[in-house]
Image 1 (cartoon, rainbow, N blue to C red):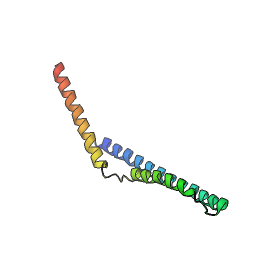
Image 2: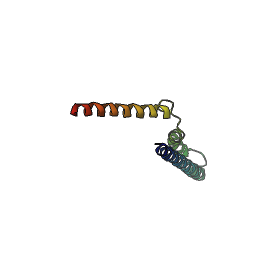
Image 3: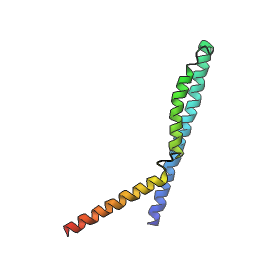
Image 4: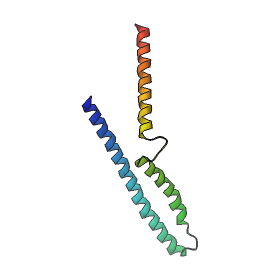
Length: 105
């Protein structure tokens, strides 16, 4: 059981690291693309209309949600809540299994 717990913790940690790496990749892409769009916007109309801000704002909202997921900034559904729900469902399944097993005996 101890080996299973260590492997489970390792897998969860690895998944979390992968999620953080994906976030930083997304953030890097955001910075590069929005910078390019800002330069293109300046080159085409010299800030008469800063249309690149629409892309920056839209993608920025996605970046914020991605950061919240990667760094687990969700106060309503945090890791403790998730673990409590998992335990609750596991206990319910165990109780259902026991009651079904007693019926068949």
